[in-house]
Image 1 (cartoon, rainbow, N blue to C red):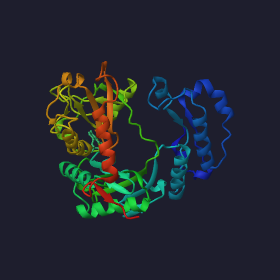
Image 2 (image 1 turned 60 degrees about the vertical axis):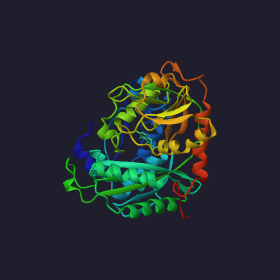
Image 3 (image 1 turned 30 degrees about the horizontal axis):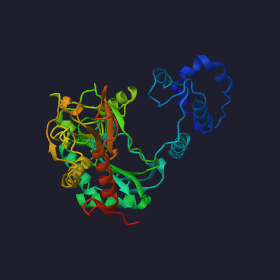
Image 4 (image 1 turned 90 degrees about the vertical axis):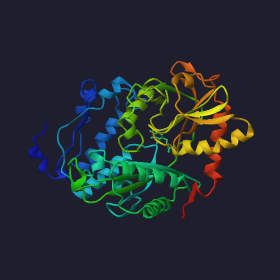
Length: 402
Ligand SMILES: Cc1ncc(COP(=O)(O)O)c(C=O)c1O
């Protein structure tokens, strides 16, 4: 390890050596051979990053999927350069260029700098923001479809409810937050994608209490939709990760560690999502979606929302499904406690949320759902939601002035 006294050298005189631990034994020779770093800090930074990408020790399906891949995460850093502000910004820009994200960030609003930036390297939040180091923040989303924000007001209501439950004061009134969000989408010129936004107790210090926070913060980001939608049937498993207690499950806080672990558990088992049961064993929800069933009696059955997140899409599906009752495709709609047994013998099962819209489930654990194919009601509900996003009433479609 380098002595920290060496860190006082300017970046132009400092080399940054980063080596993957797993590469060390197998590739130690090639590493020293390749160690022809230029004395320029930026070139060093760029070359070591490129080397890591070109010399993976295992082929990684998804960076967290294989046991061996986790071993490649460790790095040895022997010298750390001291950077000026412009050098740090330049490195942020370059580090973004070295990985190809499936997502493009088109614009970000931050109340900390009081404006919108289109430069993705500036889309950062302060380290001493309590949302970063204490998880004291809430968030929400809205889809952007053909230049309209879908269910913005419904999501905004939940956002403000979550903030109230998390005791986060609003930095602006509801109308101003709404205006800022619409302006951010407008500046991004995005017509198809998603808007994500956060309310935080804000930057200030590293204490637990937010009493030292300067003022609450609002952040928003516009993400362009690049991957084609996939509505095919998927498999789910029962989550072994504990669901959040009701007090926390009903608010959309940034504490999504159980949700992330639950999603990883699903991926590790070749499934799309893991389904949570509540503390009494009833079906609850997925890590970022609600669930619903079509019973043998052709009723749409959805778990009640008292201990889970009140999904804006699920609530909208309940309204749109009325037309299927009128048509006779459904015999009724019920929102109540659902047992695992009821769920597993259902004719259809589906995941519902702003990310998945309506996604048919064809297998839950070892149980094939219905005939193992995407069901007609799931398909009809998906079509209704897609139609609603494209030509629904003004109450669910907010136009973005470009
Ligand atoms: C835990 C959880 N449940 C349900 C949902 C679905 O909510 P919505 O339809 O509003 O996206 C989400 C959405 O992110 C979620 O995180």
